[in-house]
Amino acid sequence: MRELGSGETFEIGGDECGERSLPASTFKIPNALIALDAGVLKDEKITLKWDGQKRWMKDWNRDHALPTAMWYSVVWYFQDIAIQVGADRYRTYLSAFNYGNADPSGDVRRFWLDGPLRISPREQVTFLASVYEGKLRVAPRAVDIVKATLELRGEAKEHVRERLPFVDQIPETVVLSGKTGSAMPDEKPFGPLDVVGWFVGAVQRDGRRWVFACRVRSNDEKKIGPEAGKIAYEVLKSRGML
Image (cartoon, rainbow, N blue to C red):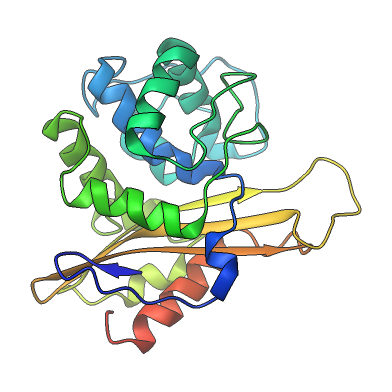
């Protein structure tokens, strides 16, 4: 985690903080920024139509706008966006963002899910600091929309509570923002670091702001995004930030 302004950094994990892995659904943060800045999405109210294909998560099986697509981590929504953005624009944006290895090659609908894109926890924190400090070369309006979508309060709580039950424990004076991410191979047995769980975001309290990235790598399919969220919550709480 890093405090914005002072730049003070706190790490748990040593060298693991510098190891890259798939970003999985944490990529929805830069994906939304790119879509808004490039005009693929005009605003957060634009609804994309469900294609009628039944998917494993029931909440994906309906139309979505950006807020609910982010809260329910709706893969098809962001894949539709990816087709419209295209690999060339992704490469340009991701290089400008210094987002991990900035590699969107292969299937434009999957490069962040099981393709070549890789990013480390340290790089996630640097990227998030650029977002929250307004240093990215994207429209400020795009940043404001994405930041508002990531806030886990108000209506968002109703949609994320099942996966992130700790949101009900966040004091009203604190703004916690975050996004989960989960990745694992299609086939078992899993290797010791094959299963990836992320929770990345920001905290604002008493006029101070921090950005953070928590990642778990294991061979346990239960230790995915919500587990990383739980760990991040406990660490942030222990440091008096929640």
